[in-house]
Image (tube, rainbow, N blue to C red; front, side, top):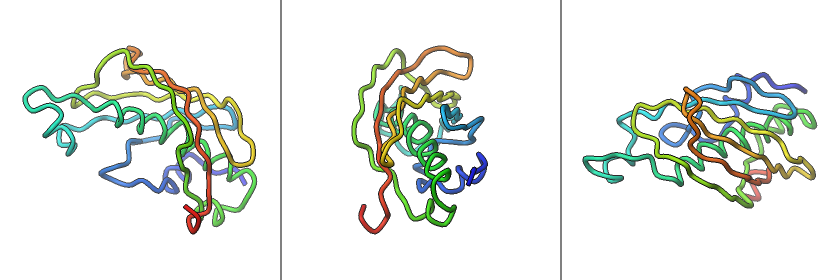
Length: 153
């Protein structure tokens, strides 16, 4: 079954305040593109860093993973099983390597572009690039994750 980008977004288990995808721009068996605007009221800015807020690197990696592993993984799983069965899975991070090039400030919009390296036995490995909306590079990563039934997570 081919899931629409709206269905994939709905199936992502992370919700506010820990969902870092506002919309899925495009998704297919090879690529996924998402966008997110970091709001000034995000809870982590209060302590990271007071007076000079910066989005934590771990949050940027999470942002990359939510589009490039979770959303894409749900889409790929949907090609193999029913929508109901897709909803019974959660994606767990298995590996990551990331390089950061610049900081992201409150109010900045980012674009996440992911390319599938492989999908086998419900494990997805993706190459992901995070940029500002204007194309300015922020981070690059290679990330792996695996879909597992929620009752085994």
